Image (cartoon, rainbow, N blue to C red):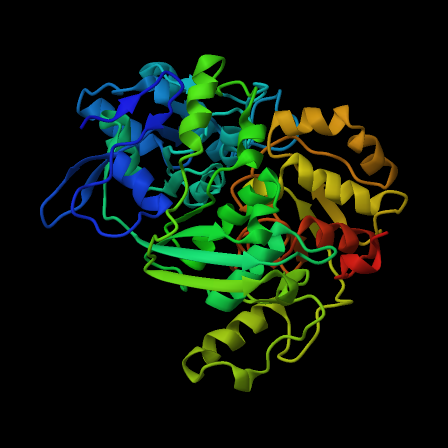
Length: 487
């Protein structure tokens, strides 16, 4: 049975394959609806509804297309924008860094040559690709979505199967709108109960990583479920799914519900009129069957989670903000050498608390926490307070749409009164591919997704945290539990 496509990019499901016992997981339903063919003793040829391209991982893919004399099969399903290399100031002027300028200019030329939609710098639709996709209604429930970027898992919050791919695979999708993939195993992570005061989706993700480690979900596609997950806003769900890759997962997603539908409705590329009604009718079927069986299932209690911080050099090295760095004898013998190396890089000691540790930088932004809800949380906590003199703060919206909403709500005035300024959209200090680099040796509290050595700049030291922890630390100048400042 052929897969049907509508103008909105919504895929309608193919009936379940015969001979399968028991119910289907949502992952199975979406995956199976997009199978073009199964290669015997090989991968699956999977149809892709949406391809996103940015300037870093696409140039060689376009060069490959040119070398073979190919055109894009379905250009209307491909959206491109620069984000990694874009400066977060003076975007109306030529980019000063020659490498960044070349990459951004090359993307513009490639999109023009191949007739693709391009949201260039200063375009009101530009921003971080994983922020723009959902907010523009480009990422929709039931879709398969890929991008040459590991944090493509973000779009899974929409109820989609979304995952990062390599540059050769980008070329494959440009040419055929399909990709060859081995089907991952399925995992469901349930988070039940009610989140405590000052605990956010970012804290859920950091908590899960601290329990599962950065390899605990390797080989799996994760479905997040449970009452605490259902209670999250759309922005919170995007944050949670964004960090799936940091557990080693191929991707992560959440079944769509009324929160999802309300978020999508009326957005630029969302279905309209009768198409909307048909889409929602289909989207309501996108859930795992009650008798679905997962390859692995885990359950955690929301009440066990407090605001989280990382203390090492991978996102799994996290702890509750009131806790102490684990003692060396609690670490597996095989991992003790790398553990010591990590703490030496960070300048921390086993058994030490991070509360009260002096910081130098605060970064609010990235595809993890650069949305309007994150700016509301940050502004709400710093309102009526002043930025600490020892702290340099970079507040970077994830898109021009977020920037517009910040100003519409007057959050920019609140932040400016507290000594903060808002920069222009981009990936910024999430990674050292643009001007926003943390200097060597400086300690940053960051809302981004990775704390690897040098991730925010050569020699930079990174503590991953939520926007609330970042805000509290920005006004005190030290690592601070936000609950002590929240009204």
